[in-house]
Length: 122
Length: 189
Image (cartoon, rainbow over all chains, first blue to last red; front, side, top):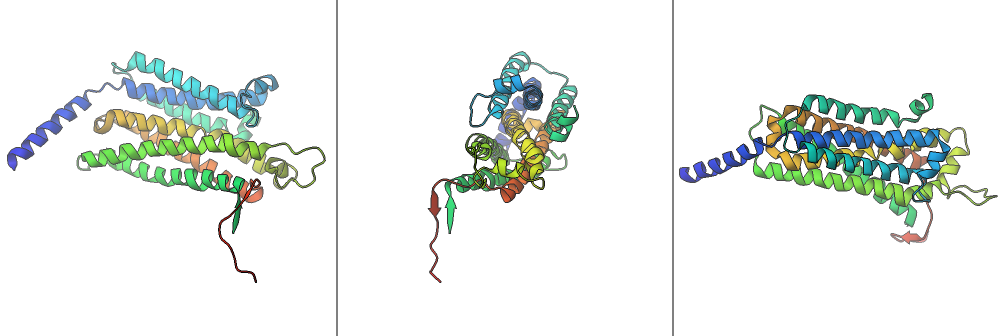
């Protein structure tokens, strides 16, 4: 019984050791690109609100109107950013604190920038 | 007891996917917090697996919520009535705009909801992917862990805003129409 427990613990320790070596680059890429993607939703919505020409360009599905283009483009921005950053950072250790702050900051800014009274002030 | 097809879709979008996401989100926040807490025993394989699947299910719910909202219900909400239409009951956006007392539900409520809701699937998909990749090693990466937790918390806020305005919009100008589905019969009085 003790032998089995020790083997299980050793196997777990190997798994833990492998996992603890995962560089933080992939996580940072996911966080920063999510921040960019969210900010893209807010920024594109803001631009479409201010420009009639861009608003018309954002209509990719007529029944839904400009929202279809705003969100489709923002999702594309998010996924492309994620892919590029993942390829660049996946094997690296990066400045996680700074990247986290930027990612979370962009997300909070996106919540504010989608609030219509704030959009009207700008 | 009857419901229209549009009413049923609205129910599935809001009460089904959206409300379920909010419920799941409160659970995920607590579990992520507990998972990372330094004073807690090492999470088991089972705990980890549960949280992985939980976050993936939340991501699926978030996507289903915004996609049904944007591509199924929103077109009914913003449909333009034919010229000369007097009864705007089937045109929720126009019905809300037609009165000063309800205009704000569209100009602030729907305008905010339609965009802020889209932050949720992006944030929770990121959280699910990061958790799937790092699993228990997330315990040793406090900054990464804090960022994931913050994204999940803000996704909860965004979904809450969308959910609140969705409920209020449906109260003031519900999306109704289409075929009627009879759910249960009632005895004649």
